Image 1 (cartoon, rainbow, N blue to C red):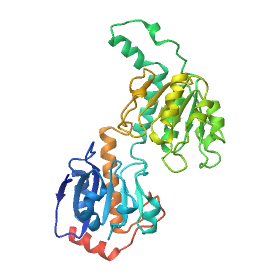
Image 2: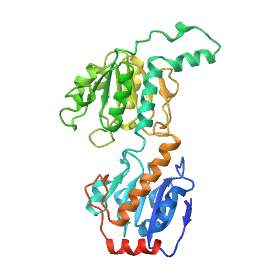
Image 3: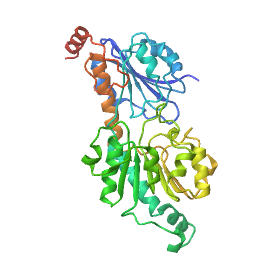
Image 4: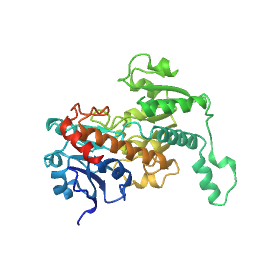
Length: 352
């Protein structure tokens, strides 16, 4: 199948900016925001593909790539790049890009770590509140013609319940602030943060994941998907939580064993789960799809009208910095921007 391509050409400019998105469930249909920011520097092209190599001819000519969705940018793809000054992952997560290979090739890779902090934190808190209050169960009961409050069963009081947060970066700490307003007792585990982080946020810090789990009635996951975090929550970890715990995942599906979660739901070890992300999404296992214990939200935690516009704008501005050889604060593979100030000055003069 031929990939869908939208091209905006301006032959007076020298750079080629390639936007890669998925053919299925594409985030972009018209790169108008990107075009407004990037056209002074060159041609902006959107390619919606199933596999990056479908755009092989464009990859070879790309000066910068903006990567959307989960299109894998593998070593095979990276080896096709002939003139690439950098890759922008239009997301917080960057697990679809072979960072080590990009580093070996001298290609800087950056992400957009701060675009949807409020949305994901709000979404996480909404899931926690809905699950604690069993809103989905009550709603389904009413849809079936019932009107009996006892149908929801036992409900814990939110105030005073213990919330454990795994990963206390921008989003994890934003969730903590929201949870504190509702009176939740907040703790976190994050081995990469400096001493005193707990004091500045007025929360408790556990030095091991096992300790955090054993003290948590509600667990919320906020870690990137890396070789270290992949599968970090499995059968043993779920078993350490307080019996009947609630679990929320708005990070990446692969940080948790889906099979272990299904078993824990079946045994009652996990009473309810709020899942914005899944392993192998968009495929949903039957056990989760048919369970009244599960509330799923189709990887939408990041989204609001403003957050998507913010993400697109910040990704485009990062591409500009890479093209201009300027310092890029969000490079994640320790490869500096490629400076070429003479070319940049000529381009700016031509644009004016």
